[in-house]
Every structure is written in C-alpha cells, then in structure tokens.
Length: 381
Image (cartoon, rainbow, N blue to C red; front, side):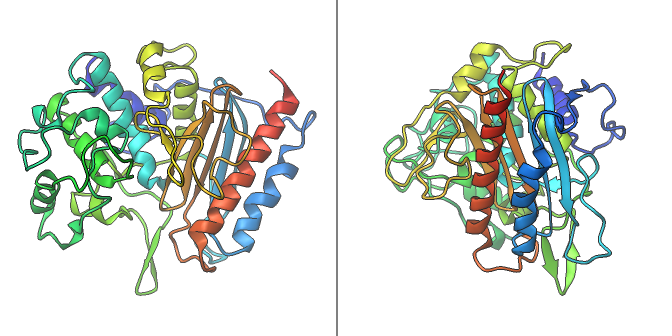
C-alpha cells in the first residue's frame, strides 16, 4: 500500500470533502451504533447537562459529542447551533464540518508518518535534513524525526508566519529556523515540528495533505460576519490553508471512525488492515515522560499525565490513554484499556460569550471524559 492509498482511506474515515468523495460514506466501512443504550444507562441524561452547560455558559454556540468503542458508537449527538443566532443551522453529527485545528497533527500527519515508518521510507532516528535538505541551519543537523514527533526538537513554539509575504516565504522561515535549546533536552509543544513532519510526508511520498473544501462551522468573525471554510490557524493559513499542524475539516461521524481505527490497532471491522498492530503500539507508547507542568508524549499524541491542573482527559482515563486537542475547541481522547474514545467538537473560537473560554472548555472536556469512563465501567465489557 502506498501513502496515497493511506491518505485516501483516511479521507474516507474522517470524511474530508474533496473531489472524488462527494458521497462521504461511499466505500467506507459502516460502524454499528447502539442508540443511547437507553434501556441500560440513560446516556442523554449523563452527557446533556455537561455539553449544554457549555452553551449556556457562553463557551461555544454548538457542539457534537461522540462516545464509542472499537466497533460501536455508544452515543452521538449534536447540540446547539453553528452560531449564537436562533436562525443558524442546528449542529449535526453527520453533516456539520469542523475545523479540527491541531487534531490535524494526529488524524492526518501522524498516521501518514506511521505508514512511512512501517514501509521503511522514513526512519525515526534519522536526521530531518535527510528528508528536507533545506533544513540545514546551525544546530539542526541533530534534530531527528523522533524529536519532531515528541516535540523535543528544541525549536521554538511558533514563528510569526503570518508576516511572511507568501506561502513560500513562510515555509522558508520554518526551514531556516534554529533550535533554541539542544534537541532532546526539553519538551516544548511546537507547531513547527508538525509543519516539518508534513513537509517530510510531502517530500517522501509525493503527496500533499491539502484535500479539502469549505463546509464547516464558523470559527471566527470578520466585521460582524461569521467566517467559515477558512482555516482558523494563521500558520496553516499562510502555508496555503493546510499544513502538518492544522487544516483538516471533518465531521464527528468521520472522526469517530478514525478513533475506532486506532482502537482496532490499525484496521476496522470487515476492512483490510492498514498498518500493523506493532506500528500502532510504537506510536502510542509513552516516548517522553511527563515533567512538572508538561504533558507526557507518545509519537505524535499527548499522553497522561497531562501536567495540567484541569486535564482535558478528566481524572479517570487509564495510564495508556492518548489524545489531542485543537485551539478551535476540538478534542479526542482514547483509552485503549477501557476500549473507549471520547470525541468532543465545538467551535469555541467563534465569538465566545465568556472570558477564559479555552480554560472553561477544559473543564467541560474533563467532565465529559469522566462521565464517559463511568458509564462504560458501569456497562462492563
């Protein structure tokens, strides 16, 4: 299987809209759903107060929550509307597209690297300059692919790419940046790492990550008008609309399929295996231990403990859990020991009506994660 096939299948899994996939579920595996399990546990009564509470608090106008296991969707529901207007369309599990922001790192960039590593086309401990010859500024020769995936490259968190005159100049800024600390000595979450990983995918596979059309919930305002279909991340925007760190637009149903792909260790029911179990394990084991105030990391994913006073994974997820969040208000956490994923998509970045919406959203995420863990524990295996 070539990388193009992987990207095409991921498009199918997360329902990226692009030419050739107008019928979003055509060719995709259908996942069995258990509607709310009302006879066993009233999941609406468990989740509704938490998610609707975020709307009433002014954190976000709309949201989708999906909770599931490797072969079933236990709960999937849309809440609120795309904007604060009562005339705005209601949120849908299947048809609302979300700017997933930094979830792009783990639903697009990291899986592409998984396959390239498995095929022997990329080596984790090879220097980045081997794949990107332009990445040859002083101090960069010792930065490896593994350093990028674990955010231990020593590169700064970001660069003012929006000030670049065009996308080519913005990319040159990234390729000519230098580490601020020695590679491998400190974990600093950096969009530059993901941008470089996206460039590695492009150079090695000959395929780009840019395969989208605008059909999303708005994430910003311009002169009082909602902005939808334009990536919220300024770096990805300057780099052409999608890069290794941001730019994917997806539905909740599609991202739930991706979560099940991960829980199934690289495959889906009644579908050919995409990557080996060993590769999934390699990319989801803790690679960088947590330090005070700094999250543990796998290859690409955030892991537990997150080092936060209020964790987006809550307090009950198991020690092998991994996940990620996005600035726009998106999050996905997976607990393989429980066979559980929790996906919460919101457009928090759109005109929040409360101060500190990012911090308050963490509280909602944590409460949802804990509620899902308790519900699944009560259900049993």
